[in-house]
Every structure is written in structure tokens, then in C-alpha cells.
Length: 138
Image (cartoon, rainbow, N blue to C red):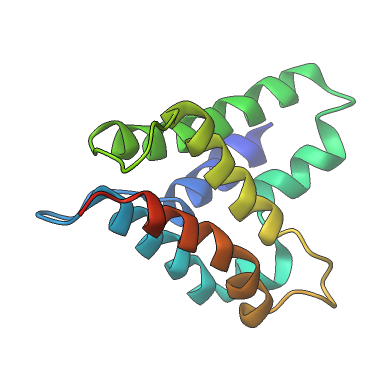
């Protein structure tokens, strides 16, 4: 639990920053941060630590599962805050979209070590980026 709270949780805040850039469009901020993740070699090669540790331990320890869910919701809410500040071309549920974004990123990072690469990550999230661009009101 200490590793999760003291090491993994801060890394998740670093990896999933999602802070709005002044005068920038919220969707562009999200896309920029999604693409910045491809520069984090440790995450590309080893996957999302929250997702990995969650798969291993959360099913056997309920306290651990609660803490993992807390960190996941904190990251999801960062994205939701950005989405709630923008207008879209379509009727969008920002709660489900923010969950879709974070789960797509985490799973794109969770390929096996032999399959992980910057190219595979960028290829995997290209449809997410395309979708986000398509709903952005200009």
C-alpha cells in the first residue's frame, strides 16, 4: 500500500498531468498530454504501473483496490474538468468520455514487453486522438 501511495500515485499525477494551457483549447491540451506519454520510455516499455499493479493485487486485497480506484478516479477527474470547460460539436457525456480516454491510454500502455514501443503506443491511440479532434468545436 505504501508503494502505491508514495511511489505509484505521484507517478500517475506526473504521467497524467492534463493541466490546461493558457489560451489553449481543452481538447488540444488532452491530445498534447496523450502524445507526451509516448516520450516516457519507462511507461512505454513497462506499461502503466497503476494498471499493472491493479491487475495483480486488487482482486485479492479490497483496501488496495479502493486505493487504486481512488487514483484512477483522480486522473479521470482531471480529464473531466478539462472536458467540462469546453463545447463540443456533438452531445458528449464528459464522464464517460474521460473514462474512455484514461482506459484507452492505460490499455495502450499495457501491451506485453515484446509488443511495447513508442510506435505501437502512437498507433494504438491514433483513433482516440482522431476522435477528440473530430468533436472539438473550433
